[in-house]
Length: 147
Ligand code: CO
Image 1 (spheres, rainbow, N blue to C red):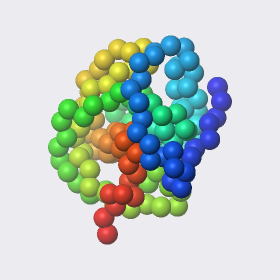
Image 2 (tube, rainbow, N blue to C red):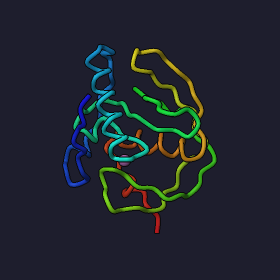
Image 3 (tube, helix red, strand yellow):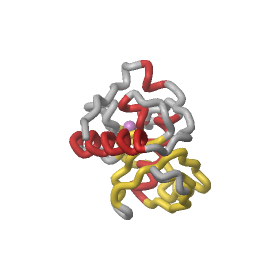
Image 4 (cartoon, rainbow, N blue to C red):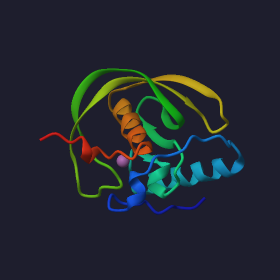
């Protein structure tokens, strides 16, 4: 495994749209393994592929309820319980702020083998999913920060 370089908010790549993942080969697994190592080392909660310069719709999340979850091609099916909570991002070091997000989210996504899942995430896990899905669309939490 190898640690990857996390790009920061001033890198124009961070604003790009990520593409659908359609190749679930060992090469994908290697990227996801490296993303996990990068996330653990950075002591973050979530890392989207775009943050390591890979423009595909996938992220690794360390959840409270399920442990490490890899969400690939995620789609938000339902989003409820909007609340404001404090947030940060590995691509925006030194910045934290309050963001309104759903705290109960049901996602459809694929795992690293392409298998489809429907799963409900709660509280900070739901926030983290939405934050990572925003990354896949070139959106940063600082765009949504409240006063
Ligand atoms: Co982030």
